[in-house]
Length: 228
Image 1 (cartoon, rainbow, N blue to C red):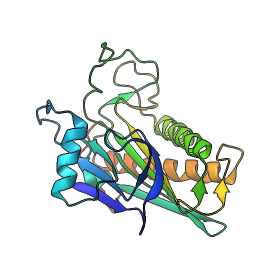
Image 2 (image 1 turned 45 degrees about the vertical axis):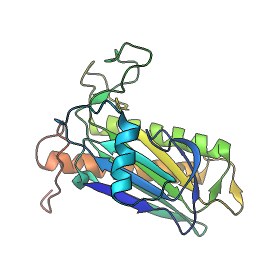
Image 3 (image 1 turned 180 degrees about the vertical axis):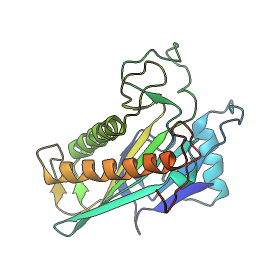
């Protein structure tokens, strides 16, 4: 299974840590692919695997692609408008790989692999154009909001037991319109920074709550229940 989002009728600016299509680029689609936890590692690497999966679905070449061991039922969405511009978050969350910043690394080699599955993948979409600096600042805001949501939920690192700030293989992407008046600042003093953080925290809290409804926070096989 996978999640595919066509960002617009034309490529949007994007900044991401995605294993395929990452960095600062122009993108027409966001692709979030589910991979099985027990699947053997492909020696070709994540980027090649994602390219194959995306090509099989006929996705455009200018895509930002991520992979996760989290079930697609962990997907949560949140959106808000600021002065006629839409900001929307889509994320999937698996916590089996929860880590705190500064935990002892699993991979000790400079050019080693990223780590086991269990990932919080976050995509933010902004109909307002962001400057390059604002894109970077927004990625930072997303990371802080993720850490805050995990702390509020009491999620601990599987390594140290300290409050988790993410997982070992998180990926984040920020997409914005390619034209229009640019937003220059998205930090915590700004309404954009506040809104982005609240959207991420709301969506991630809902995804974690979905896991707790079935009594298995460490699992990435999330479900939702009307009784929760």
